[in-house]
Amino acid sequence: MRFDIISVLPDLLSSPFAHSILQRAQSKGIAQIHIHNLRDYANNKHKSVDDYPYGGGSGMVMSIEPFAACIEKLQAERSYDEVIFMTPDGETLNQTIANNLSTKENIIILCGHYKGIDQRIRDIFVTKEISIGDYVLSGGELPAAVLVDAVTRLIPGVLNDETSALSDSFQGDLLDAPVFTRPAEWRGHKVPDVLLSGHEAKINEWRHDEALKRTQTRRPDLLK
Ligand code: ADE
Image (cartoon, rainbow, N blue to C red):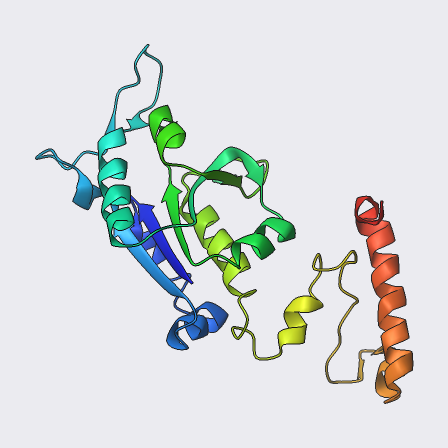
């Protein structure tokens, strides 16, 4: 799967994909993540990518031309399943959206800044608008990194133990059960006996009960 991320602050995206699971997904050749500097597509000598809003008001608006030039260059090279704009007024990201995107081949992600991007970019090029939650960040880079992480770990072959993505919180109807590692007792706090029993059926039953309890108390909406 290939992601092309278009950003005015590409340095913000140099680290999130260089570690752990995302780094492994790229070295295995399962995911390709390309970052494009929007300024490289500015057609003016100051390399500016924004301008004053028509109608007045505070804040700058990202211009149509640099985004259009970058998107059209990419689209001339291959076909894309989605052009996604990260924006707080988009559809809120959830596991269903991540699962669905993990089946795609090529995705372009646009990161906005300032007051927003010219509406015509959204109308003409964007196929999906995604928010990572009801709060406003300074730009779309961190949301883009969140999206790429959530999607990439779902691509078959990325996680070593395929079942571990399937048992994630949100992947079924339930949150994850609590987990423990050594030591079996720390300052008087003990790991539940059943987890030390070696009895697989009982362990599974305990995990399911705990997952249910946790979901009932924290996220009862998931059970409806
Ligand atoms: N850009 C700024 N805030 C955002 C958010 N919450 N989700 C997606 N993109 C954003």
